[in-house]
Length: 183
Image (cartoon, rainbow, N blue to C red; front, side, top):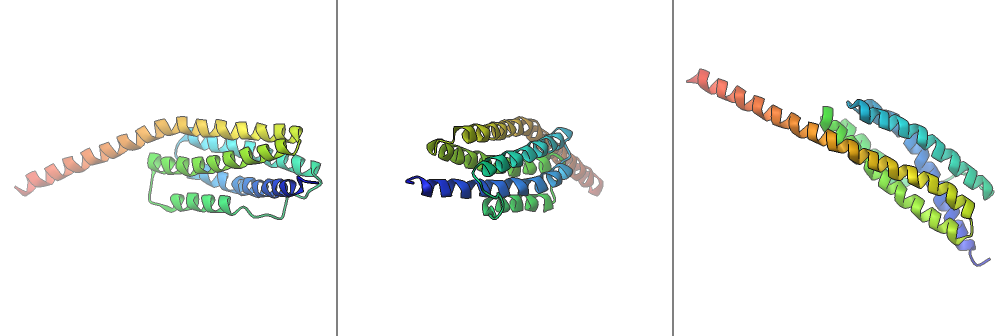
């Protein structure tokens, strides 16, 4: 079979994404907890439920191929989640923390979009149209999540800028007050 090398690669990539999605299932609740924005928190929790569905779809595809989904560690997702965890360790608060979380989440979404695009191309090349269709559902959800995060980021970033400007004004007022009392 001439496509056996591609089929093997396809299976390896599916297992990699399966592990990535499972890592994300563990990371999303932490991101939701770290968020101060109710809209962002709810978005993370909604995506958590979607991600559980992504895991089930991958199990279905791998089962159709006669494969066990386990056995592969996704180092890419591991690194992205680690970066997100580092952002949560920073001294950021409120909208600035939320902006950091959105940045981390969008890097994850872009990684997943690339990964799903790849396996869909492999599935199509291998004549696995039904599997490609199943994977396309997930790809579309990943794209929708990315778009939603971009939309939320607009508001969050404005709040972060407004908060920084208010802090600067308070510092200037405090400095003027100290200067007057010293004179």
